[in-house]
Image 1 (tube, rainbow, N blue to C red):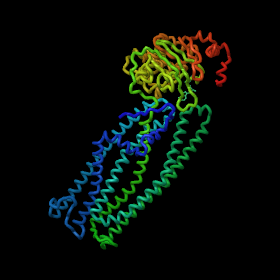
Image 2 (image 1 turned 120 degrees about the horizontal axis):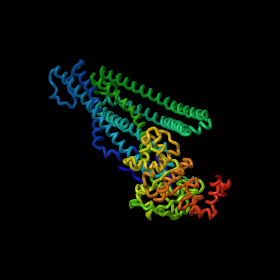
Image 3 (image 1 turned 90 degrees about the horizontal axis):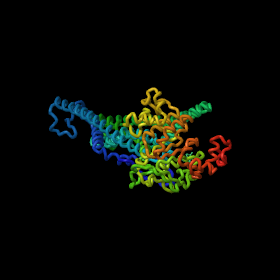
Image 4 (image 1 turned 120 degrees about the vertical axis):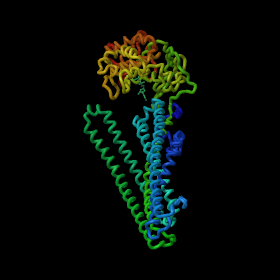
Length: 639
Ligand code: ADP
């Protein structure tokens, strides 16, 4: 069962995760939707789990009954003949000894059956729960992997992680606890009432008269506690957000020396959480003690009325007599009835939480993607590397003004294209469109004549190697990071790629060489070292098109030169796009595209552009130090 993607239109903004569920499903209860989607794959286990749960609960009602029957048959003055419901009279032995042994046998059989059904119930429920969660988790993960970049930019990472972790766990608690509990409670309530009515409907009527009081109490409590829980949830959310920000921004906090202020804010948030929790706790305390009191009062009432009934005959308008044994049975049943009805509130609680979680997880599963693969998508094969942009315009979702306007250019196979221009001109965006991290609003981008939106995502991205300014290294070894595109590659290829990226020397000097762990939990590498590993990763992939987006911005000039030298034959043999801050990095480019405010304003090689004496020429002058004056356009932009 994979995720179902709905295509978003260009100017549609990303909705929140929960909102998606409501759009798609209207009033359908999310927990019901969840069960509908996942139970069919696990019907057998679910059926066994439900049946054994019902059986188990009914079996727990047998001992009080047997006790009552035993008391009446052997221990009270009335000494009625022993008869057990559902057991044929012929099976019951004649003498007192035999009968006593028979009853003892029934007690043992019930105990064994109770234990057995419990064991089956526990394991089948656990299997059912894990199986559903596994499907749900993998579906939700796959769905997020298929979403477009704009989703991750608009939806806070925290929300996505929370839906993947907390909400899935919340559903776990519901599937194992709430769902089972609700089957148990329903069985018990129905079973108890049936047993009680069967045994003595008049006393049952009296015992039931308390139920509306209990249900009323539960209802009032639910209404009152809900807003307090909401407050508590938002207080804890704010507290967590503050901690997250403070840890993420620790460097800024330290350099601005604002620890005290942050600490005071944290104290305030923590205090607010405490207060919110206290308001909820007070009400809970009141509710639980009232509920307890009510349970005791009801039990006591059954004791008093039942006792009276047994001793002096039916009170008021009642007519059926009550034996001592039945009185004892009812003491157990009555108490159980009251207890179960008071559990309904807890069930409503877990159900409400599960609904909210199911809504978010479903929202993630059905999140509309802006970028999706066309049904007629073709495989890009044996790419030569001819890239053509034709009148491409693009605006980031939610942005007010266009980011790129009418961008048109061509790159021949093997050509080295440099993109230059002020920060924010749109250079990175141009290349992100080639990778199809976003779709163009207007115009087309083709590779070897095939529109990128008509190619399979996998073959497109296989054809392109991309190194960004701030590359991400996965937790794992240096070798694994370099050989990311082919984990089974031999050592020689890895070392070769590292040498080209001028990374071999420093990798060799790491504590465990190529086996050194990097990433968040590994050794700390400098920005330049990470960039060189990322370049090695792209070189290793050996793609027909290579994009270096300020890939050497963190390395010193000398290392940059070395990398360039070792990359030169690599660049010569494939279409390469290089965005560089240092104009000298792209000086040798076959063609330079100069961008400003989302438009290509000049293009040509270094010599031609200098001759033109336009924006590039002024940028070059600043670069070489021939002038200290920034070009007019830069000053106008305040850069
Ligand atoms: P350059 O690479 O030339 O510095 P970019 O392509 O990164 O420029 O950015 C072009 C413009 O688009 C900038 O104004 C930037 O603020 C905006 N921009 C970049 N990335 C995003 C994004 N993910 N969402 C919205 N706006 C963006």
